[in-house]
Image (cartoon, rainbow, N blue to C red; front, side, top):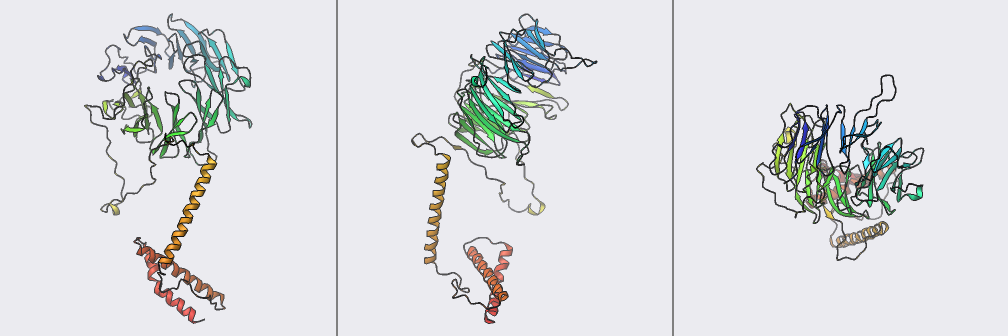
Length: 583
């Protein structure tokens, strides 16, 4: 059985059983209040919490037994620590009326006793939640541009500090000890921005960093650790593109490994970087980039392309939890087309369409997908669909037009809870019709409506291609200079062959023009520069007409103005004769 999915919206909060039943869960009692602000699962999926505008409730998912209830009517965010020892809640910060500092708004509770362990002041909602290592041995939060570390959930003592000039963001590595930290320091006064990797607790000076990468073009960065914690991908973006080429600012993609290696990932198409995701196997990543139609490419740890998916209407990529399937999708301002790929063989499995989707998530079983249309992103047509990756819609739920859905998610499961299954290509049976949208007819002006349609494309889509060197060929990939030289050499060769072919043709074909001799004898001048100029122009026009006649003879369709030119030939010949006789 697939896991259940909670649905939060104007109709309250309820749980839907996963495939194959899709009925509302009778174990979890629906919370019908219209004020459910946030929901959260624990990392292993065993606990579920929500705030409903009165209390923060925590239940055991399997039995729906209420474990804890906290009196926090203003809480708008909540999160569990990785091993379910601590519950964190956040509410908006407010100062007192007389302007003095407000009360702490970030609370950490011991889930076993219900006691408040610590309260902090956390003004911004962005990055509100402290970050834990997976075993909860350390917990970190960003305070006034430095990172504070606590050990073993003792929040009264700061065990360590990472102090650089102005740390604006940090990410802890996933997985087992030792924990590594990626920190971002924005550039100022002509100094570049940089990302550094450290191993906790070695923070003593720049020499202690595992790796360092600096760059100038960065107003903000996104840092993505791979699952094995061996490398970080950094998407650096500027708010404004100085060249004026892009409305989205400018993005670059950098690779930094914990062994000190770093590189700029070379993306072969200009334009925004929409999405970058690691394969759960930690040795490949996929980037979706470039002006529409966007390219998508899988790279290895050397930042060499492994497979290029060509171009298409897409701006997001999602690997399945086992990493055996990749979905490329175009949501937001695109039509919701999805391409489902078998990663091992790079074969296309299905091309479903989920129009108006604002949310996409893989089910932990690696077989099912949920797509949803949620408010406030879209206020109409709210609902969700559950799919099988082969393209079948297994369940479709739409809410009445006066209601909204705000959030849908899957219950998480520990890794390895679902066995890996072989990839299927045949669509699984479904009682619902396939979600093929009606093909939209392009607008045709009245004058063209009864005429045959001529296919015209604004751009040619690039086909997918395997970028791996063939196993049989032991050749190393060529360097940039070698490739350049090879291209030059090939171009020269082609030009030589063309020239050869031209001389052969000329010797075979007699001159096509009978009226105008190809090689007139010695050039005769009239002594009057004006007349010479006219003769020269007339000869030029006649030569152009000759070329047009040759094109027409070869079967090329000529334009109206070109046909008119050919009709003027006799008159031009007469004029040239008169001028030459007057010499």
